Image (cartoon, rainbow, N blue to C red; front, side, top):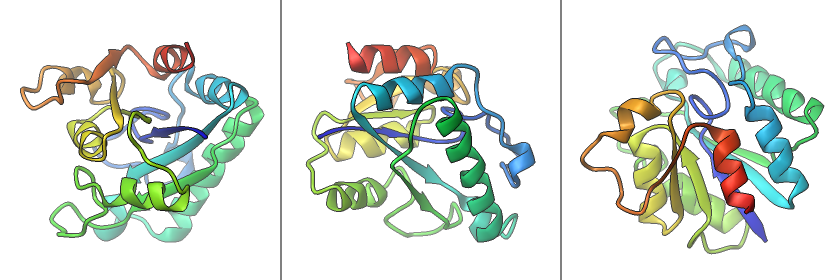
Length: 177
């Protein structure tokens, strides 16, 4: 099975320091929906793994998160793609849960759900925690320079095996090559 794991905010859609709290605030990064469509057409199962601490902080609720994800799924479908599943951590940043990236729990859950080893699976993110979680489970960390990516690029703790691309479209082209 060909699998790719994508972070949401800063990779698929524009990020916000005030959090994406409603469907109206969710705006795709140019080219990201088409990149997901290409991955789908090339036979990849696309899975989203996203920290959503706004729930734990009380900034939005599950109904709002579901509405945001519904909008994202419909937008991807209109572009000709598919997101197979969405995994998320609802806990606040100070939580000690295992599912909040950079901890690997969410990615391990993906491995269990899809009955696969994540060794070498492309995991695309814009923040250090996305890449660290990927490295812990043996996935291939891929940094995109959208969202927080430009700032993350210069971080001294960036996993050594991290590949870097300007955006999801460029990363997808590399993944399928």
